[in-house]
Image (cartoon, rainbow, N blue to C red):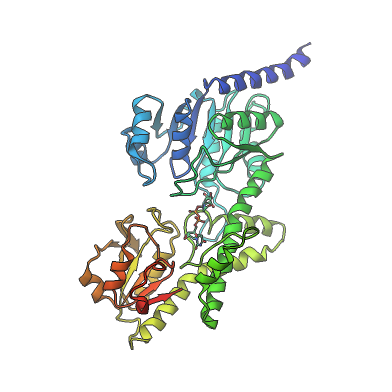
Length: 447
Ligand code: SAJ
């Protein structure tokens, strides 16, 4: 009799948890208040759950609890109203984890200095959860990682306790799909993949995310979901590399690559436009494919396409420097001693994130080549280059006139490109940001 009761107890736990999820009675903890965790926490709170954020950065904790956002596309009001109505708060310690039924991990998964996956933040969160693990905990990893992380690394750590996965606690992976600065796709209307170690885990995670996301899709195991996320971002990485390399060839043969891409974009099916640029930044597109190549190398599999794409993308800052040398040469000037204004330091337009930004590499390289470099970025007040601080210069006619070349690295929408062209000696436009300006075309060189 007892033998038959035990599986039933597990079944009953899961069924009770599903009911509590549907009734929004479960309490949720989101670990990591970054560009993934913060919007996710807000969405879960908006949908009616009681949510607590956890972040070890006390500044972030204080800002959110005071109703202030540190992410430009998340409004203070969105946070303030939820905090005021006691729907969310943020803490900077893990001690409360027993109190929460659902724990979602949204911590960074960067790479080490020798380009290997760095799961230290994930492991720290999991080891802490293990110390507070209890029956009926539902644990979901959202951080992008290589296939096998959830079932081969995370599960063994949690299984060091007396609790059994799929019976006492439930574990799965659901990759984040946040596009920083995208105002069309938010958490609610961005389709979501979910996966679990057991079918019961998957169903619980599916039920939970379905409470606040319109379209949720199950995969048959966590490795599928982990690999799918890597495919999504590697797809972007290699296609950006394609158009970056195409831009180099178009420059050799004198064809406007931007018009080529515009023309190809008229195709009704089977094509999606990507655009050349000064390199790729952010902590996803340049990083995630390295999780794929690293995992492939474990099996002595050379994922050559990604290796080559990374080389092409990572070489774009050097291409920008060399093209700048050619532009200055046309004025009889050398890069050494030239005055250069860089516009846009964040890794893509209309956001403030400078992680892995090619602008930083270009700034540093120009200085090394003896140029006098300034930058302006309405979203980035200051940058640190080799432990030296540089502040964003306010733009005016004199500053631009005094420079030998203005380089558009990030095409923020707030720039007045016509005014910039009018007051610049020359403009190196790496984003085709000036495409709609008819005047001053003679001043423009495009990537
Ligand atoms: N870039 C190009 N050419 C392009 C597109 C992008 O040079 O055609 C550059 C950008 O300037 C930027 C870098 O690539 O420096 C990455 O831009 P991105 O928008 O592809 O990547 P993220 O990291 O801002 O956001 C992406 C999401 N973006 C989109 O889907 C548009 C998505 O891939 C992921 O959900 C997200 O990373 C993530 O967190 O994984």
